[in-house]
Amino acid sequence: MKKTILTDKHISLGAKMTDFAGYRMPISYTSLKEEHHNVRNEVGVFDVSHMGEFIIRGKGATELIQHVTSNDVHKLSVGKAQYSCLPNETGGIVDDLLIYCLPESMRMDGAAAYMLVVNASNIEKDWDWISSHNHFGAEMINISEQTGLLAVQGPKAIALIRELTEVDVENLRYYTFEKGTFAGQDNVLVSATGYTGAGGIELYARNEQLLPIWNALFEAAQQQNIHLLPTGLGARDTLRLEKGYCLYGNDIDDYTSPLEAGLGWITKLKTDDFVGKEFLLKQKEAGLERRLVGFKIHDRRVPRQGYTIENEAGEIIGQVTSGTLSPSLSIPIGMGYVEIAYKDVGSRFFVSTGRKRIAAEVVKMPFL
Image (cartoon, rainbow, N blue to C red; front, side, top):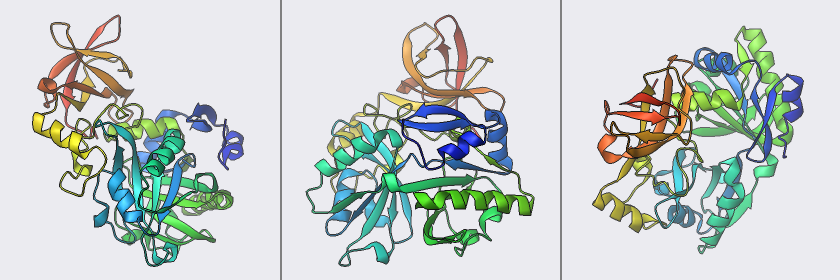
């Protein structure tokens, strides 16, 4: 298993470690519930250095990204980020990703430069996919092994970090970023993004910079009397699910279309042709047959990925993709694909555990 640069630090803090996407990662340090509530109310820090990062720059960079992603990269300017996905020819999703439009210092011959942030489990797959479509002469550099990433998330995140950086984080708008010094470390990318819905920032830095940044965060928290907790992947999952954020491999994959997944807002069908556009246009015109929905359970049992969803007559109408006992709401919640007739808020169905059928109801997302 691969390790992040902070793996030994996590172990020294007593983290429960797990294998995830080929990496040994912390699942929790204290308890999932405590870490979850702390992110919602204070601030937590996640080591997510397993994520992949690609630089795409030079002549043809914009054209390549426009061709392989579903969103409109032309709307990006320096200092802005964009959520998008890599569709395949049959309407599925190769991966979802973030695209950063990098500053002038990263450019070559005046041509645009971008950083793509992809899921850890898909680094090689995404690299090969994008490379296979690079008929535009763009330069591609895989910096995943050299790059670390910390997510500092929660309502007190900005108060915690504002004295640690020259970046004006208090006025950093959502989905924008700046490069600057952070905790004495140079050339850190400070991004107003995250996967928790609790606010905060993400820090991209060279591997050797990550431990000094990590230590500086905890020193600042102690000085400011802010309750900062290291937070694992367990709470990361419950936090994102409460906000209805899709997880690749659960809620979206090579066989789910962005339209079915409720990601039409990042699927710009009026832009230049991109991979899979023709299929998605036809799917939209024909009408969707299924839709990803959020639901709550009228029971204490937790819906699990792979459980079937049935109607009153016992006919299978869908499948659960994600589920948890929401720490914030204290009820079981889940997401899953259902036949289009059952997509509306208030629709009722049953989740089958194999032994029992649990009553469920479609609710508006986000749950929280």
